[in-house]
Length: 94
Figure 1 (cartoon, rainbow, N blue to C red):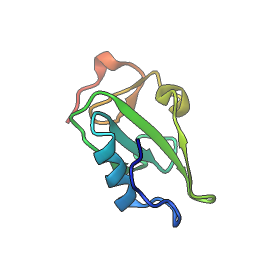
Figure 2 (figure 1 turned 90 degrees about the vertical axis):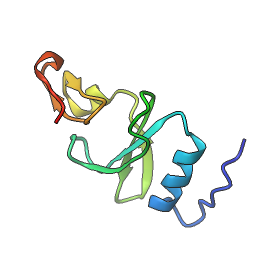
Figure 3 (figure 1 turned 120 degrees about the vertical axis):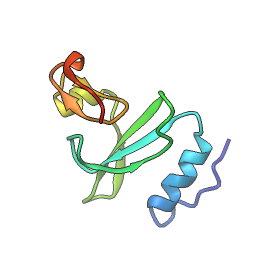
């Protein structure tokens, strides 16, 4: 199954939007750094399944974040608002 997206010139917001349409049962979240405030792109927010990517702004490559809590060194990362904290029980989304 192909997406029909031309990757010759890299992947920007337009291409990420097309990927989001193709992977319509997942929420694509792209981070520019390893903290919760560094979100560059966030797709369908109403889906629980996520594809977390880290953009290397030097090489312009995307890396899959297999373990978001481990990558951010947090015990809890809210999948609703992407806020990181020590414990999920004390967190409330705004």
